[in-house]
Length: 149
Image (tube, rainbow, N blue to C red):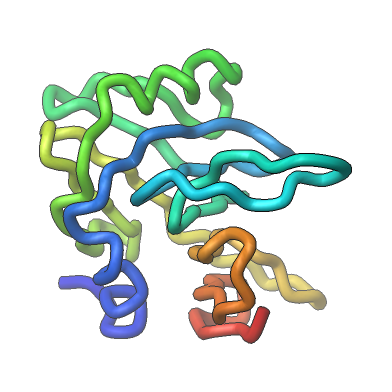
């Protein structure tokens, strides 16, 4: 069973391909159609219709349990996750409130639940539509909620 607000946040991604992943201070994963957005500086860059940004412990595993990449992997390991492209088949909550994204090829992306007691809010992950001013779903040390862009 997945927590209702988190289930609702991932519902639009059901059936969408995850076609690219990488590092940029955080791990990022691109879902859905490739769309062009303004790049920093000049020009445009392709991004997913949706992006998942993760700044807490995570791991991408095959159906046999082999870890293809995790929060300590080098950029090449993340790039390899998009080949072959897989589609999001569902989302669930695992032990200790870990979020588990399940893909049609049997792979899973597990995002650990981090419980910190910090004086300031700490962001763990964010689901967004890159380049659009739509609300972002943010999970942080203060809970899970939608944030205006």
